[in-house]
Amino acid sequence: MKIIFILTLLGIMLLYGDESGKEISYKELPEIVKTKLSEITKDLNVTTIEQIEEGGKVWYEIEGQKDGMSLDITISDLGLLIELEEEIELTKLPLKFKEELQARYPGINITEIENVTQLLYEIEAEIKGSPVKIKIYPNGIIEDEVPEKFEVDDSWESKK
Image (cartoon, rainbow, N blue to C red):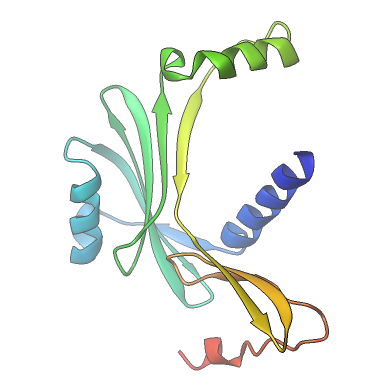
């Protein structure tokens, strides 16, 4: 379980690690991003919008409040949902999870809970009979687990 957590954390660091962003206004959002945002929520009080660029990929992080709770939405420049982070009340956390947390961490005082939904495509394939696993995020970032004996051609990225 700890290994899965560490690998997930490393993946997130790789996904968002080398990014440069700038704050923009709602008016500056591409129409396709505005459309996706309105499909996800109608009543968001937007507090911050950031345009992120990394390796030629662009996405938007929209932060706001809905019904007194924080809601952070990440949408690609293609209008695809990348991630949705929704603050939830302690009462919405399943009782089994609360009990497990209290058993593992006696005296825990939970200060915030977020329900996080992340979209990605997981691809299992073969190269010359060897299995490979590939993850593609809606912002175009690709992570792979390819055996070292195979060379991965990243030159296509520079052709975009």
